[in-house]
Amino acid sequence: QALAEVLAGHPAVSGLRYPGLPDDPSHAVAARQMSAFGTLVGLELADRDAADRFIARCTALAPTTSFGGVHSSAERRARWGDAVAEGFVRVSVGCEPTDALVTSVLAALEG
Image (cartoon, rainbow, N blue to C red; front, top):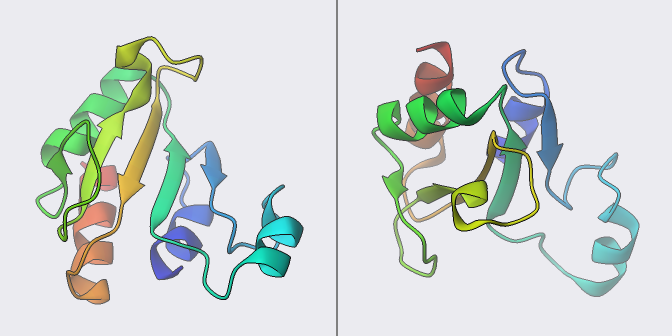
C-alpha cells in the first residue's frame, strides 16, 4: 500500500494499478472480496528503456519472471509478449522494511 501511494504521485509513473488505491478500477470489487489488497503493484513508465533502467537500478528489487519469494522483485511483462505497454513493470513486494523499499524505488526512478 505504502509503495503504491508513493508511486501514485510520482512524475515518472504514467499509469498505476493497485486495488488498494481508491481510484483503481478494481478497488470496489477488491474491497468487497479482500481484507488486504495484496503485494503486487503494476506501474507504467515512459517506455521499455525506462522500465529496464528502473529494474536494473533498484537495489531492493530482484529482476525475475516468477513471483512468490520473500524478497521484492520486478519484471517488465511486455518482454514475454504480453499485451501491455512496453514500459509496464510488475512489482512483487517482499519482506523488506517499507522505508528501505520505498527509498530504493524512488532513487531508481530518479536515476
